[in-house]
Length: 295
Image (cartoon, rainbow, N blue to C red; front, side, top):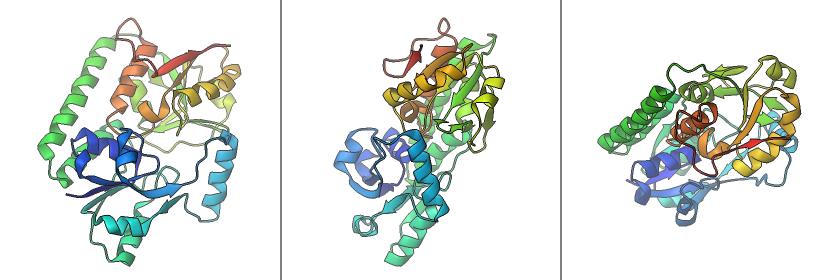
C-alpha cells in the first residue's frame, strides 16, 4: 500500500506501525523520524515562520484565515504522481495542517481515487484510537493493537507510580503572544502525569486568554509548550512568561516532540511531565525533553 501523510503526527504513526517503507509522500514539517523528509516526496508546503516572533506568527495566521486563504499549499501534481492508495489528513486544526476538504477537492479534480482518512482526535484516548484506525486502513490491525497496548502499559505504569500523591496545579501555555490556554488532549497529559490541569479546556479548542486569568488559577507549575517549537524555542519563550507567575515553577518542554502532535510520542510527554511534577516517583526524562527556567 502506498501511503501519503499530510501531517507530522500521522507520519510518526506510520513509522510506529513499521510502515515507513510504504510511505511515499510527506509534508515540509514532517521531521520525525528525520529521514522522513529526506527520503520521501514533499507534497505539502507552507511558509517558513522561523525568525518571526510569536506575535508576528499569530498576526500572519489571523490575516490569512480572515481572508479565507490557506496556510498550506498542496502540491497536487506531485501528489497525483505518487499514485497513493491511502492519504492521512485532518480537519481538527486549520492552523496545524491542510484540511481534509482541500484534499478531497484536489483528488476529485485530479481524478485520483485514493482513500482519505481524516485523523481528528480531541482527547488522549482518541489519539490512541487514531493509531488503531491507521493500522486498520493500512492492513496491519494486529500491529496497531500491539503499539496501542504498549502505550497503554506505559501510561498505566506512570499512573501507578504517582497514585495517591497530591496533584500539583498545572497551567500549560500553548502560545505566549497572545497567551492561549491548553486544549484538546493536553489537559489529559497533565492528568495522566499526576497533575491537575487548571485554566484548561479538556477536549476543546485552545483559546486566547489573559495572563491575569492564567495567574488567577494559582498554578504550582507552569509548562510552556508553544505549538510548533522544540525545547530551545520553548525555553526562550518561557523566559518571557516568568514575570506573570512569581509563585510558580516554570518549565519549558519540547512541544513538537512531546505535547502538541497527536501521535505516539504523547506518552513520552506524559512521562516527561510526570518527571517534572513527581521527580522522586518516576524516572528522569531524557535530556532535551524539558528544562526549568529561572530568572
